[in-house]
Length: 159
Ligand code: SF4
Image 1 (spheres, rainbow, N blue to C red):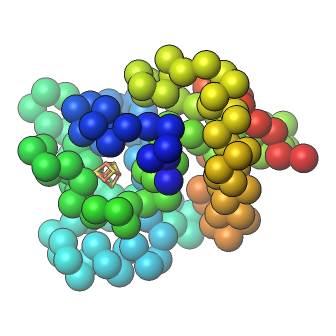
Image 2 (tube, rainbow, N blue to C red):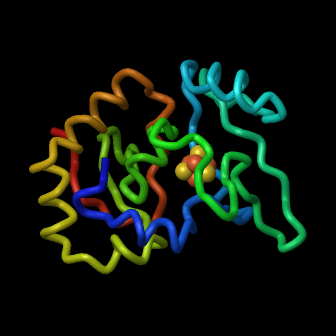
Image 3 (cartoon, rainbow, N blue to C red):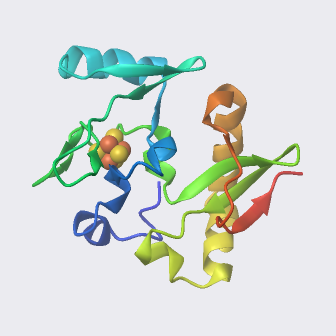
């Protein structure tokens, strides 16, 4: 989804979005029903926790105090290939709710994207159709919309 703005090689050498600390566990990707069925079939050892009508993959604390996504192969990357959770496909863009409005924000932790000019980040949302796609997804899967977190710059407000 972000291939035109974010180089695959940058992601391959980083993968910071697949590792969480105890403060950003809320950022772990939501798993919709279709993906849940696939993960259950292909990776039956995966455990899930419920979040409203959705699910999250259970992540256990590693010896270094971090939580690694169970789909992360530390040498070759995401085991889900192109069929990742929607949260992962749009990351570091995030869909959040602030004051009753949906907003698209960006996670500052992504070094490749956060260093881009604001005009490029917002322009990509509109020109690629990604903003519309994110809002459509939010309509179909309201659990995907997270409460606004301070420190996430807002790039677009849904009218
Ligand atoms: S599902 Fe894949 S892309 Fe998403 S956090 Fe896990 S390993 Fe990373």
